[in-house]
Length: 210
Image (cartoon, rainbow, N blue to C red; front, side, top):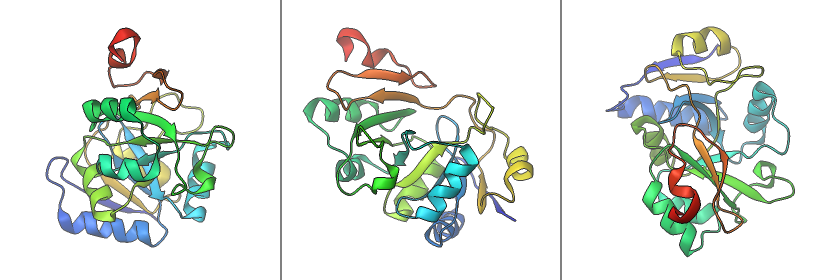
């Protein structure tokens, strides 16, 4: 049976954020809101928790997992960021974007795309997601909360409670979530390439503007 925390979406209660991080550190799987949609996350090095998320989402080994970071300095530890990529990251984080970058050795192999050695990274502009990553002191391994057979993320915390209470350890209710996942931009191959259009405006990464 999962726990259910009602957390203020603009001023997250520090006590509840600390309890959520304790659940993550003990191997928990946590549902939480971001500035795009709700996501499901765990510690990046917790193999058991990662496999639980894989099963829940029915993901294969080619899925690009995302590391949700509190700021750009965290991204620099886990991804290879050249000058151009850094300029784009600085201009568009925090925000509803996931950036695909070459991974450093800090990223566990089980999270990498098996051939490309890439990882997704983002700095969400949602106070709850930011507070979790900041309190944790490291990124959360994360994927959008889109269940198998569905095209849109779950957005009603009470529906999540009914559907997921035996599959996750904590659901953070930060109000209704968005119905679009983040926009995914590949920066690993030089020129920016849009992998998925979501709630982030893709135009800064298209054509001459990029």
